[in-house]
Image 1 (cartoon, rainbow, N blue to C red):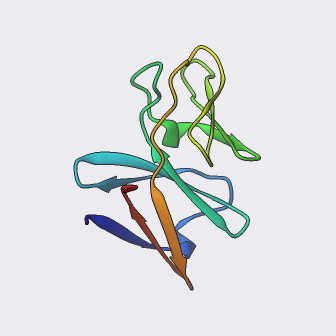
Image 2: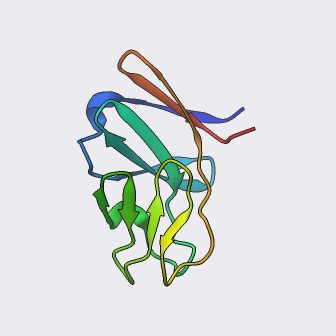
Length: 102
């Protein structure tokens, strides 16, 4: 299975970062000691979520303000109405491995 490995120090608290997994862009975010990975493209518009803002467990699309839950990919506020994909995240010490969910 395809995966990417990153070091935890590549992630700043509540600052999303874009990584590429195969042909997909993935938005990765660190909140305290937890790491989350979601599809980087907003389901409402072709905007990169890694350019958005994070508050609590929400990421906001910079283009129209749609918000998504980083834990589940669920839509929290319009104008989006479709959830975004989430990815499997495994942390082993200072290494984080991200892959597609089975």
